[in-house]
Amino acid sequence: MTAEFARVDLGRAERCGRPETIFCEGKLPGEVARIAEVLRAAGQPVLATRATSGHFRAVAEVFPEAVWHERARCVTVGAAGPSGSGFAVGVVCAGTSDLPVADEAAVTLEAFGQRVERLTDVGVAGLDRLLDGIGMLCACGVLIVVAGMEGALPSVVAGLVSRPVIAVPTSVGYGASFGGVAALLGMLTSCATRVTVVNIDNGFGAACAADAILRLAADCPPCDPPTR
Image 1 (cartoon, rainbow, N blue to C red):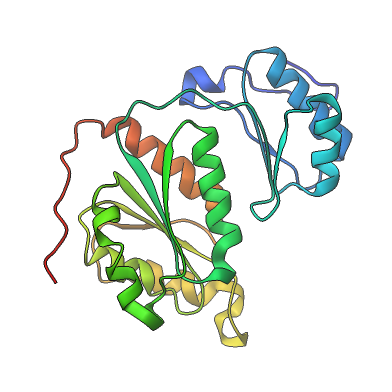
Image 2 (tube, one colour):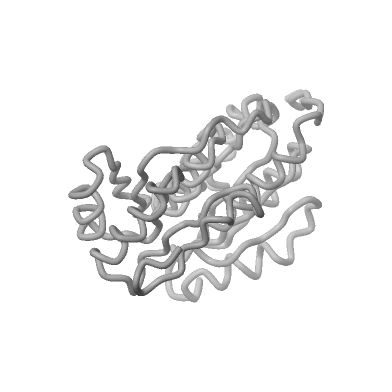
């Protein structure tokens, strides 16, 4: 369906399992609100990513029930029904500074009807914090691990848990981190198996991958936490 300036793909949910998402960067607030109207008129939920407060205000004028997820920079209106996979997605965050990307992943997953379990501030500088949450991670179907600096956390998690690990490098770090490139390269060269890497700061892409995995993994048996 056309929204004057955009061709809204209303068939994406049927083809791909989830409706079209509005990427707000470069779009005027009124344009985002108009696309949201088209989606809602078709009975589809709205997820707008990389949004500003201006985008949210424009959407909220049309849909007062819209929710502004400030740190995630997302706007949602409605949500998909439960995925029925029986599993949650574990969203693991190395440090508090990585939370915007982790939140983007979590909000995206919830908009897709997935259940999310969070484990935050468990970077490799204090591994005891991560070990305290291993039981929860083992109960999840897939894990999204968000980290900046040297990007070591996904390798550690993949060495402890048998679930698929989607690694998300962030642009957090000092000069030699090169805006997340150091973390990206570290994750790409991980010696741990089952680590898949998405682009820098791409919490949305990680959530899409996790959603697709869980739609195929409903019969996957749980794993037991390792003994300490």
